[in-house]
Amino acid sequence: SFFRFVLVLSMGSGISNSFLASQYEKKARKSGCVPSELPFAMKSNTRAYNQSYDFAIEGKPPNVFLWYRHRFLPVSPQSSRPNPSSSWKPLFYRGHKSDSYPCFLSADGCNLIVLDQRGSVAYRKVIAESRDADTFKYAWHELFESDSAVQVSGWNKTWFSLPVVAPLVNLFEDPDLRLPCPATGNSGKITFEELVAAVAISHRGDLVFQMDSESSPIPIYLDFLGGTTTLYALLPTMRTFRYFDPYAPLESRLFVHLPETQNTIFTAVTFGASGGTLLVLGYCLDSRTKQKELQVLTRLWDADLSGNTPYRSYAYLPDEDSPKKYVLPFSSWKQHPLLLQVEGGKLIPFSEAGAGVTGKLTIATTGMGNDAKDLFLEGVLTRPSENPKLGYFKKTGLSQKGWQFVESAQGEAPMQTLPLSAAYDEVKEGWKNEVFEYRGTLEITNRSLIGGDLQTSLPVLMTGTSPRTEHSTLIILHRNEDPSSITAEEAVLKPELRHRCLELFQAPSCFEFLPKVPFLDDYTFSLVIRDELMAPNLVQSFIPDFESLSASEKLAHRQWRAKVEKGPTDDDVIITAKTDVSLGIAEVVVAQFELHKVQ
Image 1 (cartoon, helix red, strand yellow):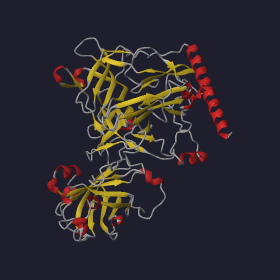
Image 2 (image 1 turned 135 degrees about the horizontal axis):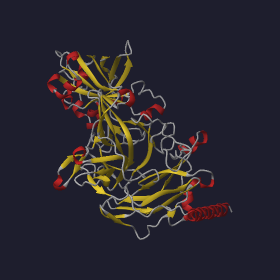
Image 3 (image 1 turned 180 degrees about the horizontal axis):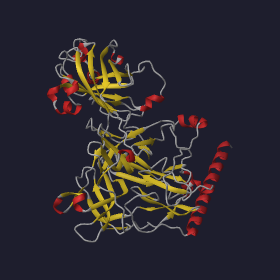
Image 4 (image 1 turned 30 degrees about the vertical axis):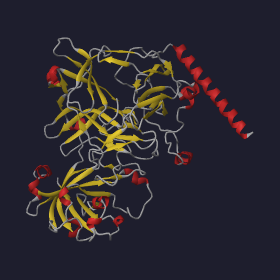
C-alpha cells in the first residue's frame, strides 16, 4: 500500500506539472509576445543559445515569458536556415506563479539560468550529452520537449546541490542563489549595475571533452558525470570575477582576477563565457604612457581547473606516475589582438581598417578541445566601402590569428563604438595598482636540499606580488649582483644575472573552508622550482636512495611548503620554506627569504 501511495502521489505530481506547463503556454501565446523569427549570433540579456536551442525572454512586466526553439543551422556566414521545427515555443518558468518575472537569461552547454527582477537565479539542465569513448562521436538528447511535466520539475529547487552534503547544509542556509541582476530593458524599476556588472553561465562538459594544461600538455579527459557548471559574475571594480559552482557552498569565495603588472591594469567593459572559458573585452591601462588600449582576452577557468575542488588531484609539476593530475596553474590570460583578416590572409590593425566594436560580445563552444570556440564582437566596418557595414567580427577557434567581418542586418545604425585607444585620467579611471616588487636576501639553512652549487646567502628579487595575483616569481641572483641596480624584468630577460627562478603559489581558496589539519598548519603557500637546472643533485646527500624514488617522489623534492609573514614593518616580508613531511623524511627548513618592498 505504501508503494501504491507513492505511485499515486508521483502520478498526481506529474499531472499537476503538466497542467502548470499547459497553462503557462496558453498564457504566453495569448499575450502575443512572441520573439522575432530572425536568427541571431550575438547573445544578450534576453537572447541566448547553446548547441541545441535558442532561448528568449519576451514581453513587458509583468507579462514576460520564456521561450525556446531549435537552433538555426548555419549555411554560410551571410545566411542561415531554421530547423523544420524551429518555431518559438513557451518554456515554463518556475517563478510565474508569484509576482516574479524573468528579466535576464544565459545558456551554455547543458545549462540555462534565468534571473528575475530580484536577482533570484533559476537554474536547470536543458539537454543531456555524451561522447563515445572509442569514436569520440558527440550526441545529445532533450530533457523537456517530450514531457511537459519536466518543463516544471526540471528547474532545480536549490543552487548548492552537492550530493549528501547539500540537503543538510540547505536546512540551515538560504538555498537560493541571489545575484544583483544586470539591468535590462525589461525592468524599469530596479537596476543593479552598482553591484554586478554582468553575469554568464558556462558548462564544460562532453562537447568540450578534452583539455590541455599549459603547464603540462597532457590531454585530460573528463572522468566524471556532468562536466563542470560555473556561473560568473563581474564585480563592480570591473577587474575581478566571482564565480559559483553548484557543488560549492554559497559561502565559498571563489575569484578570478584580470591581469595586472606593476605598470598596467586591465578593466573590463563586458564579458561572456562558454565551455569554461571567459571572453573579456576591456582596456589595458598603462601608467607609463597614460594611455589605454582596447583588448580582448580569454581564459579557461573554473573551480576544477583553479585547484578549488578538494576531491581532485593537483600538482604544480607534471607527474608521469599520475598523468590525470591537473597541473597548476592550468591556464593564463590569452590576448587576441584586434587584427582584421582580409583577402589573401593579410592582417590589418582595426585602426587602419576602419573597424570599430561596441560593448557587445559572444563566445560559443563548437566542438571538442580547448580551442573549439567561436568569438563574436559586434561592430562596424567603414572601409573600403564609403557606407558603414554593420555586423560582427568573428574568430573561429581561439588559435585563429585574425578576425573576419560578417555583415549582418540586425545591428542598429548608427552603432556607438568604443575607442580603440585613448588617454586616460588616473582619478577618473580609478587607477589602483597593488602589484609590488621586493628586494632582499636568501638565507639557505640546509644546502643539501637546495643543491651544492648555491652559496648560503644570495641576493633575491620578488616580482608580481599582489593580493590579486595568483603567484609571484622569486629570482635568485648571483652573489656579486646588486639587487638595487637590477629590475625583475632585466633579471628575467638576462639568464646570466641569476641562478634560477622559483614560483610562489598561494594555496587554492577552497582550503580556507576545510578544517585545520596538522600537516598544513600555516604553510598555505607552495614554493615551486620549475627550473630544470635544479633537478640534478637535489637532496641526493640527504636521501641515500634518491635514485630509487619514484618519479612522483623526485618531483615532490622540487616543491616546498612556504609560510609568508609580515616582517618588522608593513613593507617587509619573510618567507620560510620547508620540506614536505609526507615524503617520509624529517621536516627540515630549507631556506628563508627576507624581503623589503621597493617603493
